[in-house]
Length: 161
Image 1: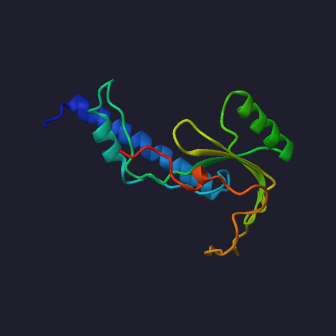
Image 2: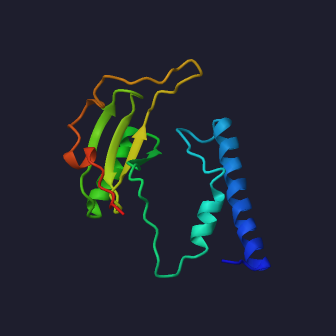
């Protein structure tokens, strides 16, 4: 397929925008402004731009990598976790898992299932790590106290492609 000059410029602009975003994410993460982990897309820009440039309004994208389990949101207190969980239940969402306290991180948590088969975690009071911390395979339970996780939490519920 031959692209016109305008299509090539649009593709380049889109790839450059994605790259600038990725570089900014890396910069902010390195400064500690983004907590947790980031998985950067730098070097993969052409894949997204090439695929997405051919999408029609009726098309959709489904990942074949079913690894996304949950998104985590830090809230100010254990009370905010409980209030958020109550609001989700009041809106008809499943009860989820929590309230509990994780073993690693020692943070309070509550998880609600999201509409896409993943989970939303609300957490507070997490221990911070420093440069001396070493990642490890921990042989400890996922939580110190609270109810056990439901079976639906342990299985990936995202739709297969």
